[in-house]
Image (cartoon, rainbow over all chains, first blue to last red; front, side, top):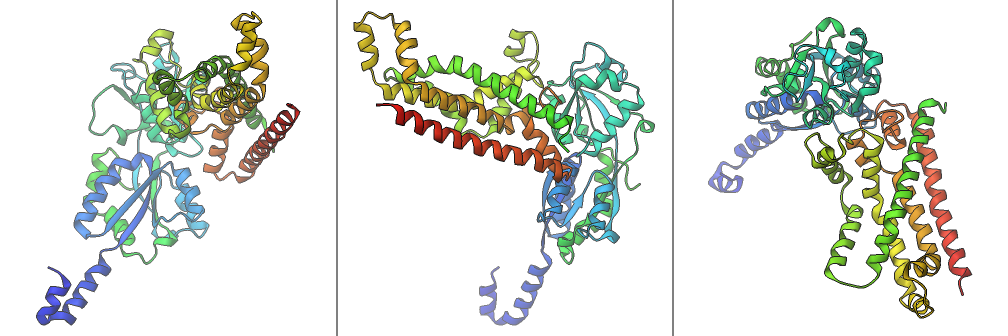
Length: 253
Length: 222
């Protein structure tokens, strides 16, 4: 059904108004997403596009990497970080609207190995000769890496593990190191393990690290972008909440 | 401002680039010689393989190296240990990554020399190996020097391959380029500037030195 064909039927002005209306409401937005939330964001994006007709494009990276890009004027409308500090700083630096900041998920840290039975019983095996490399995310750029360092310290394993630690640039690369077996074990996000039962896993007790509260914020560039605002609203809604919980996150915080 | 972390990265990078250059000269010179002596499909294929790292994205090399160093790979079985996240692993990656930058200039030098000097040496009953060392190598020395400098500099500038197979271990795999990346990702501009500015000056000096050396060597020849 084209505009021209209908216009020739004499319904021009009315339809033009209708079509322009639709065009204005189907907007596009680009969202910067912390790597741990990759799979969940893609699922939420599909649901969001189906429900609203808006288009969303994701850009994934470590929280620190994305924040650097945002501070240098990257074309992102929304920031889904893996911590609270950087969205807060974005607000303070005038890069985001602080009033829009909220916690969309609370992440959990897992010790995971591609080898069945290796880490099920707990982290003590990391200190043995069975493990030569333990992957963590870069603690200065990735909040899950910082949480891993905190948990290792709380376990009293700092010294034993120091020579074994290898850093992924984001939690995605960290998981990749563990999946390929190049690192026998790695501290990854629970969400990355959704839908797979391979290998072995040990849930890191939540009293060993500060809760990984992940905040979202509307960036200055996204202000007035209907799709960006709709995406944040959708992220708070029950459909997104269900997906977030399926991936093992706590909702809000 | 120039702290121990940076120093460690600089020393590691120089060590890696130095070891890579030495290995590449040892492997690359005979390889360049063979490539320069004659034609044939085998040589064409080998020359193409040597040049591949010029066009391949470092991520492609990094990806295959990562698989090659995995726990189930033949290489790991052969060595009895995995090379991932180790200095030796980076060394292997760097040798492959910088191979064309060393082999191609040396090969060009051997080709420019032609077959005449070696024929003359043979008529004087010089053993081929003797002739290679006393005739071919000195004649090709500008190319060898260019190859060594380029191989060294290219390894110093390596980033993508190291990012994929290194694991950013201080003193073992955290080279200058990775350290700069870290500083930038955490908005530590001041430290990033020190290392990045140093790299800029280093690269400028390398290219300038090479231009001057080449001019002098070609000017000195009859």
